[in-house]
Length: 48
Image 1 (cartoon, rainbow, N blue to C red):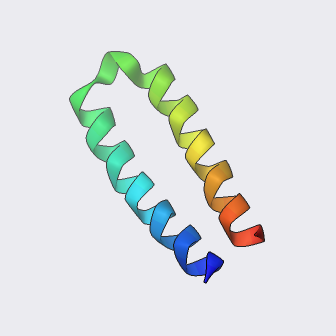
Image 2 (cartoon, helix red, strand yellow):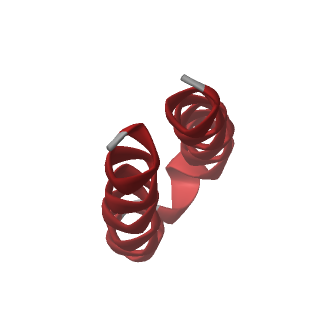
């Protein structure tokens, strides 16, 4: 079940990042940090 949640959060995070990047280009650094944090969260979900 954790793997399912990890995959779902990864997809949502990816789509959200795409929208976020297109809306606020000046915030690219913040978006990158958020993206990395999201990837770590997905990894933790899979590992958990």
